[in-house]
Length: 281
Ligand SMILES: Cc1cc2nc3c(=O)[nH]c(=O)nc-3n(C[C@H](O)[C@H](O)[C@H](O)COP(=O)(O)OP(=O)(O)OC[C@H]3O[C@@H](n4cnc5c(N)ncnc54)[C@H](O)[C@@H]3O)c2cc1C
Image (cartoon, rainbow, N blue to C red; front, side, top):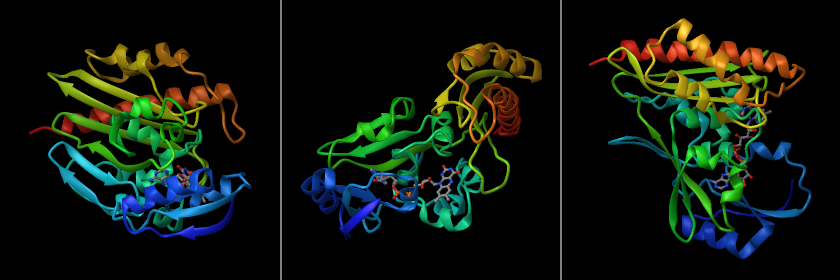
């Protein structure tokens, strides 16, 4: 990146006004950790979002509202009944990067290996975008394209609404990598709800082994209403694998990415089922 200046607005309105005035030359900046990966050499003015008071995590009736500039460390350290994102945060790269990287910066510009889209898809999180009006978008729609395409000049992602895990629900998360600081080769997240010993609802999301993070609707449909268990999981996963295009990252073949996914989706289903069984009144 080629920054030629910066500004540190103190309110959301100031930040949006600055971005609108700067046009293509303005660039919102939160933790700034992405910029080593960007090849854009056009001169930019950084508009720092970290003084806008968007770094809170608040518990509300239906779940949690995570401000866009909450860092990965904030999410790791936050604790409340039904909060599961600490399980994702503690697997995120290294502590110095966890201290800087924010949830907003981690999901506005997404790579195949990006960690955060996967659990947010499985949890069906809602993304709050503040422009001239405030609008809320479901995670499936948000991640269906490269998310910054949803933002008009001056728009900012301001919050992520994350449902809490309730009675009868479980969450499973796996990130497959060679070393703890490595990029993921396969990230899987599952949210599952049990009712009367059957799967009432399930969401399966995958990243790193596919070109972009995505849900696996065929696996979800096959399991909805089924009795959970190793055979049901394996059958549904094997039957549903063809709905995705598999793409191996960092030296692994496409076939191996597919195989890794088949194993890790079953693992995440099993973890979510186990938690849901134990998560009773
Ligand atoms: C060495 C290294 C390894 C990494 N490994 C991984 C990894 O394995 N998995 C992983 O998921 N991440 C990894 N990351 C982090 C990831 O690449 C991003 O750098 C990080 O998540 C971005 O967060 P940030 O707050 O620093 O965003 P920034 O770098 O500040 O911004 C990122 C982008 O989002 C935009 N933006 C930021 N906030 C907003 C907002 N609120 N509204 C609108 N636009 C906004 C910016 O304009 C920019 O385009 C790694 C980073 C480094 C440096």
